Image (tube, rainbow, N blue to C red; front, side, top):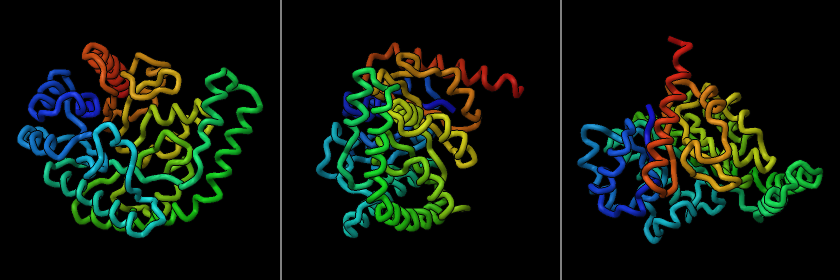
Length: 307
């Protein structure tokens, strides 16, 4: 299944009917509900999902009270928080997203797990990358410096995430929902590569799965944090879906085929039976349709050897 995220037009189309019609006209098989939807948009969209439910939904959806659509990606509360009240509120709001998924018959809830509370040293890598010094020894040293600082604080945040996932897995089992943990674009965010393995070791046999974001993995590779291929190679057995978007240098969420990524190689890694969702920033219609056609063509050629 190939779907499109409401990220593309949630900010532009405040009316739910217009939002749905615009997405439907792009020719995708289904929709994904992004974190950018307001409560009003969600309510207006509900009648349109009675026959064709969304394929997936990201927490938190709809946006949190007091959060603007443009700031939806900046989490105000975290499942990784060391503040017990904040963490519990993040769990409560995630459960609300799961209840919405249950109401709309959405099978998969994609979780953003939070971050390690460390000083953001991303600039150590991005500056050198921007100046074309990716291959020099100094670049590797800066990556090591940033990730070592993360390691000093990560254990307590991992424990907080485990407590959150314990509650959410129990609810997902009762609701008969799949919850999927997503790789994130920044080194200080959770999970990193090793943490995915840790969480599946702790919750083996649970309703939890892995959600792979192609652009996030590629960005981490460009910044020397982790090879993009390794996520899919190591966690394929847990994979339930992917978000697809291209990178232009380090800028994410461009339509596939308009940036730096090698999409024929990426599709060779993707199982044919998983959800594939284009997650694209607002742009003109034509490149979105061209991206759909590219992905459909690559998916079809990927399936032919198995025919």
